[in-house]
Image (cartoon, rainbow, N blue to C red; front, side):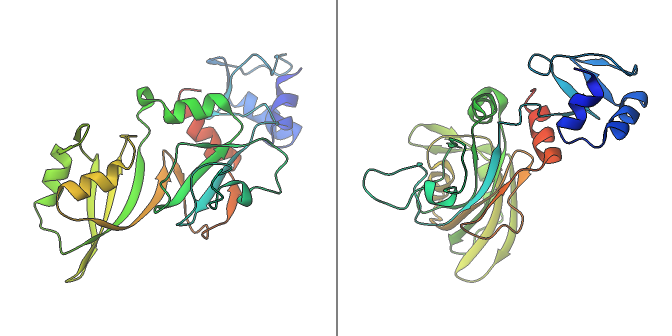
Amino acid sequence: MRLQKVLAGAGMGSRRACEQLIEEGRVQVDGVTVRELGVRVDPDSVAIHVDGMRVQLDTSLVTIALNKPRGVVSTMDDPDGRPALTQFVQNRSERLFHVGRLDADSEGLLLLTNDGELANRLTHPKYEVAKTYLVTVDGKVKGSLANTLLHGVEVEDGTAKVDAYKLVDTTPTQSLIEVVIHDGRNRIVRRMFDAVGHPVDQLVRTRVGSIRLGDLPPGRTRVLGKAELGTLMADLGL
């Protein structure tokens, strides 16, 4: 299939617009820049990037962002009858599964997909995908807490540390903190704050890799756009 037709079919623009992308040297096929029109490719076996962004060629694959509400368990169906994830994607025909998890008391960004390789890379420790959380804790935190969390605290299964720390707001009774962490251990953010004497009141995940929660309301979903999905895939080496 001609390259410009493959690009157009993947939603990169009209046939003519895709031809222009090729002529401008902005398209790579398996890492090689293609400038010649009419080059034929097999969309099932090649990797195509435009401006460094991976183009998703398989239109059967979809990735969805969900703002998981508090009280919902991170499983598609729960045998105990607790609120689960399926209720938020009942209108989708794809067989979706969740990427990672948020405990029932936590809320925020959770990705659902039918792309097994994407899910594997998002969760594999090798790729160290960063996740950002807004954490509301009891008490007014000390300035030294940032240094403590950046250098690591001891939890039940070893040492844990954050990649970034920012005090967003504070009152006499509570503090709002943004942390970035790539550690994927169960309830690790809560356990870290427990270890430093500031139990978590509210935990909201606002970002996974390059994907942001934004203003998506609780309980609502959105399909990732081509640009943000392409950026995510490129970041993961896909």
